[in-house]
Length: 122
Image 1 (cartoon, helix red, strand yellow):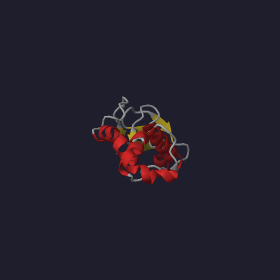
Image 2 (cartoon, helix red, strand yellow; image 1 turned 60 degrees about the vertical axis):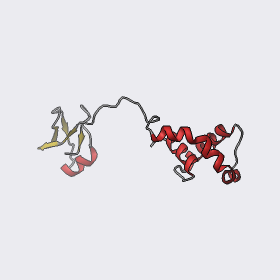
Image 3 (cartoon, rainbow, N blue to C red; image 1 turned 90 degrees about the vertical axis):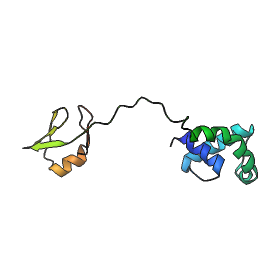
Image 4 (cartoon, rainbow, N blue to C red; image 1 turned 90 degrees about the horizontal axis):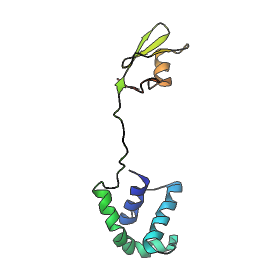
């Protein structure tokens, strides 16, 4: 869930979705909806108005219309083949020196292939 989606859901439902520095975004969103500064002590009295004004955005969140449209590549999965003091990627056959690491330590040190980006979780 994106920060924008959290803020909208929190404003509409009254259930806290944000924490820490994210809380400032809830205030900014409430101020945008109300057209004026909104202070902490006002939130309980404005709950119904904020809910009504955030309803169209909440519906967009529910429909998935605010979801990120980033072009994301599929995750490639692989595993390391170990021999002597080297590890080889099962996907691209990139060969890495383990530099004195044990196999278990290497898996923790290098969870992805540096050449092809395969996630070493097989």
